[in-house]
Amino acid sequence: MNDSTGIAGDSLASALERNQIDWVIAQGDLPGVELHVDDDAVWTRSTLRGRPSHLCGMRFRDGDADGRLASILAVYRRARCPVSVWVGPGTTPADIEGRLRRRRLRCEKRFPGMALRLDEARQRPIPEGVRVTPSRDLAEIETAGHPLIGAPTTPLRRRQHETLRLLAASRPDTVRYFVARSDDEVLGVGTLFVSAGVAGIYDVGVHEQARRRGVGTALTLAIIDEARELGLEAAVLLSSAMGEALYRALGFRDVCDVSLWYYSRAQQRRESGEGEPPR
Image 1 (cartoon, rainbow, N blue to C red):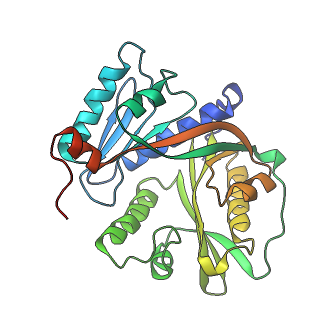
Image 2 (image 1 turned 90 degrees about the vertical axis):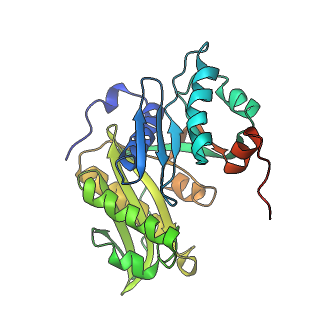
């Protein structure tokens, strides 16, 4: 597998955004998810709780932006389906955040979009006794509980774990999971998604009892090593506040900002004149 063509002619910020859009498209193939790849936006609507809905890749013309936003958001409102709206470096028009705010969508988070040329990666010591390997048998993750999901003890969590299995099965050449272990104990998990000529790093999580021991670093370096083996030149990610220092220590640098907005069921009910549900 080699998906490195074209990266030299594209900016890392654009590659990061394209990788994220392709990640949403990959999830759009899951059962219970309705995928729309329009000329000016990519959006998914889930009919199953536990499969998220996304709107991203917005390239609206200035004169059409309000109308397009209204028509897409109306689909979610009629279905009472909350949706995450991603604003990246290529989103247009430039004042899209103001338009989202006027529609009373809430900005949940702002992420530094970070990138690393793989030949510039800095090595860091791996904790003694920790090993990281690719994993296609996700049973061990379910037994230990994914650090970002938990154990599959509820219908919601079972569906989220099912999502991991389905993505790995449907896209074996582009989706790979990595597991950090010490002896037989699962310490953490990370995801590699190959698209847009880069290695997208997603959902790096470490169990609480194993944090601040270098496990997140070990997972990230293992994904970087895999990306090199695949002939890729760069890795990209959206960093959480917890992981930012780790990624900077490995040589990742800021290439863009990405914001996450949320259109909630509560807001959809208010717009429909229903008010808040009784408590």
